[in-house]
Length: 74
Image (tube, rainbow, N blue to C red; front, side, top):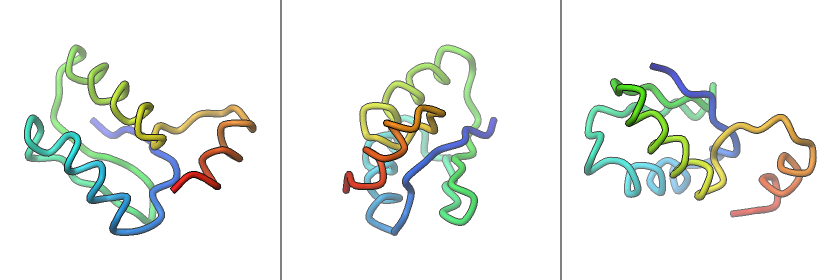
């Protein structure tokens, strides 16, 4: 499964995601260029992943306010 993310700007962002999800999902792959996260997960795990990405500020959201907030959050 591929999850569209946002605000993945540097290796620090990648490391933050890997620290939060890597122990439970060691096969996760993050592409900074496309800002996507690729992972093998079921529907239940997908919700866990998306919740964590949202908490960290990396889940893609169409809201302009969230895009602006994400731009300034580091």
